[in-house]
Length: 490
Image 1: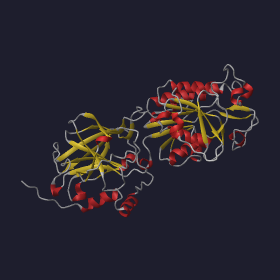
Image 2: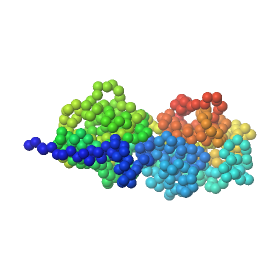
Image 3: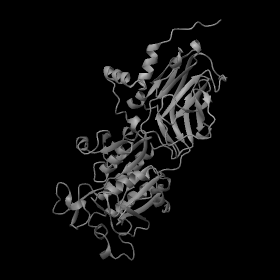
Image 4: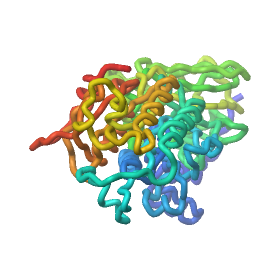
């Protein structure tokens, strides 16, 4: 018996377009009325994952934080005093109080959903007679002042503290070849705000769906109807700005439990509402958790469920939105062989990128000279003050080397950066990388902060230790791939 058509729900149609800002004025008005203006959604601005910065309020650390924010990363800062940190760091970062020398403060909350750690911590060294409030004497790294350690010891900070941070992070970092895009086991308010329903109401149908966040998962559920020539329900993200860059990965992995029906996964590489999508159909097993791997090279370009005759592959550098769908149609008018109208449920635990290159997940700022104290053949008269005065400064370089070793032994993919004397110079600097711990010179804190951030996206920066200094250049620039390619793995 034929079903009678139901009246089209114009209000739900308008509400859908408003939620996704297809009708910007109405969407803005609705958010103002409801008090839910999400202009600062961190997911909508962020790259994949959270980067934890330790030593975030220090000379290099605060530059690392600002640089990460400017590049669209979600940043979490480990600080000893949140009130002080708020006066130093950007507003749109997460602050958690703790201390690497106190392992009990390195909590699961601090480590949750991490993609990488950048450790900028160090003991405080200042002139014996004291420094200015701006640390103007020591910040330049040029003139020599008789130094002393102030506060905690190098052993506690440079070795035991770094070791504590490494051990805590190792339990939470993802597998090197996977990147979590959405972790529905720990949904943040930002994550919840970015997903919404797109059902066949946009073409006159009456299907209804929603996404709920319960029991450590997302639940895509609702009722799909073929009335009014409809027959699909879906949930989709708002546009991600800037888009996700998944170019270092092979595909998408879904962890799902379904009802035995065939669903679709779709990704979009442009911000258009009704543009080209890249689709893949997958079958579920009733009431069983499964992993669904979707290689990027198997995604089918479609426009409104019609395949496109194009040889262009998906632009994985620009993933603007993701979508999950249940539809009575497969492609080009063909019917979905595993489709039943009515109630449906798809539970989703996570969406990840898989098959990626091994990227550094822990960047440690150490120091040039860490292997030189007591090295045979060293002429101390030619060495920097830190090498000459290592014992007087509590064995600072010796303990930094021990801290490095704790990271190397952890099996976390890492980059260990050993800068020469740090300065406050600004602007781009031409950098030189060397290995063997023999170079002397200086380099700006700006340059080291940028170097830490660049290392996160360079596969050839994984599991390397190197020294770095700046050199004079009339046209300074750095080919990061070439610089990291010149290094030998540890």
